Length: 258
Image (tube, rainbow, N blue to C red; front, top):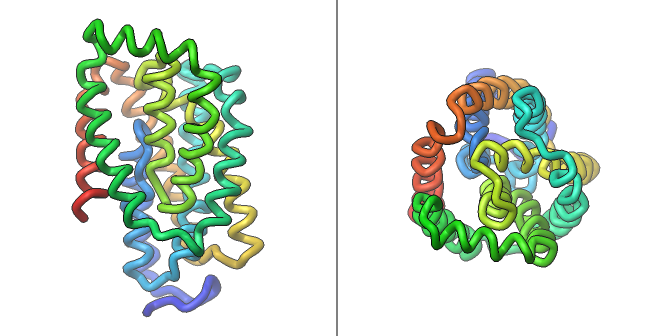
């Protein structure tokens, strides 16, 4: 193992590798989330214990979430009333996720999430069909019933397996709340940022953040979130559909088979 605790020294080239991965995963995940599904396995391969890998990932992800939020605000893709309504549930999910980090077997959960991501991506490809439009309309009536538990689950998943929480919340905002792809990418950021801040505080108090990696990775994700958000926002909802579904399929397959 290369690491044994959150304060161990790290070889400079490993910091560079982790930071480059963090940048591209933040850029890649600006639209649909899921970057942690790549970053966390990388951190584990470097020898970090699972709680430290998850804590380091949560700390570093703050940069990308924050800069992305600023960009989506600038492009007027934010509905703050909707975003704030999900914050409390994201906080609950993050706390529950932290409690489960050291005890939950994640393998089955990862398979279920992978299957759902691929399935929902295929379904959403046909979202302009009348049947899907009717489904959105019906589910919107029950948003106050469906929204809270899904929002809680999204934050819990993000903490426990290091990623995919943003993806789950994206689907919730599209299918149940009728958001466009870009609107959902913006409006998921505030509740996830709030949940991440709580999780980071808990991970820091427990000594589960490897700062030698986490700080440069945070800077990298901040730049990745900024450039990634601008890339997608400049193309508009219709043009990002191909990116959206391509990323969804790749993430789902990665979870299922790798």
